[in-house]
Length: 87
Image (tube, rainbow, N blue to C red; front, side, top):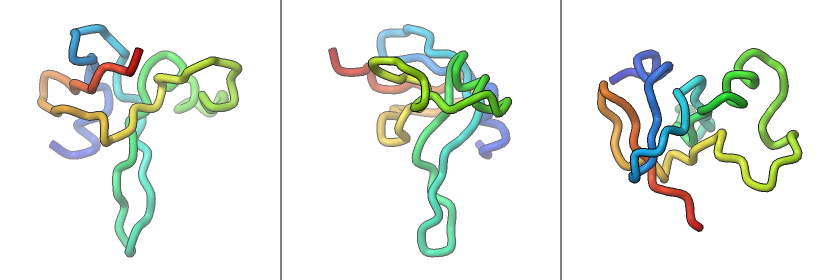
């Protein structure tokens, strides 16, 4: 699966709870190559993609709009499954 195919993919946690869709991908440049660090998901992720602000700027106790790549359990054409957030 390419990054382009990942955009728009449904994202759920391990319990099946919907977190939204992949709106963008976060990456860092390391040794002249891009390394994926997170997935931008959900309603606020869509607003960020449109240039209307970043989730970290909004007064929210916990942002689930950027899922760290390390929390991704599996990626298939049917969707992305991520670890459930700690309680």
